[in-house]
Length: 339
Image (cartoon, rainbow, N blue to C red; front, side, top):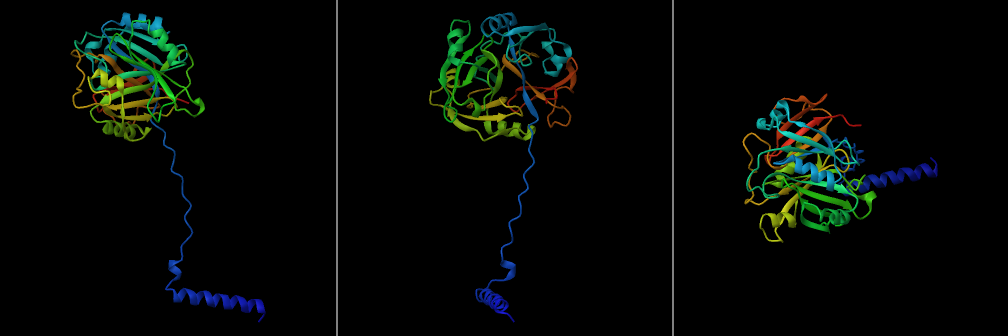
């Protein structure tokens, strides 16, 4: 037996003795850690914001202001069809005038105005449902300077948002239908920002703002139903909402953000206090102010929502259908496969 072989046998025997005297067994020897299998990527079912609908007593006034002051162009005018009105659950909106407009920067994303009867006493940011349209712009301060001379009512900013979004700057105005319009831009490192880059001075809607009595429930609904990315709501001050509701400036609201498949397409979810109620509306018509948020989906088939009417070709060859969300909001889904 060679010296090397003898040394190996002695070492093996010593190891066995050590194992037995310490009470260890072969079964207790730790096994190699298994190789982790990456979780499959989940793609949100809502791809992007396609359109925001404002219900107004005077669509001509909306058109004139948006054309002149927001640089939005009118691309279509007409009357709401019976099929579309029924799909919204607003049959008495049939035959009402509408105006469809877009920005120079994003010609395939729209703001639409639909005429309704006036709802006395309705005020922006006081009821459940869609309350605001947030629009990406090149420079909120320049937008503020321009719109300060317009018929729109200034309600906030320009100022930077609260942490952790304090590199984002915004100003807010309210339109003639009590629709709140945020005009927002990233003032920090654009390459690291969740915001899209504006393609024109005043570009497209990139956040639809929804309010209801339970922010946690609303966030959970949209994350579970449409696989949207997001996180639990957190308490923060929102001065324009506190002011609208006659609350102290330091009033905290729960605020959540959920993100769609395409960057720069989001939904802000605000939790309102018990004093806020469901939005009043004229019988069989759309609710006043920001009435509908329309989102693109690749397919309407298999979605776990109860549509007011079955999907139908409401936008030329594109199918669409509407459901009522957890805060009473109207959500229109338009089938348009995206790359």
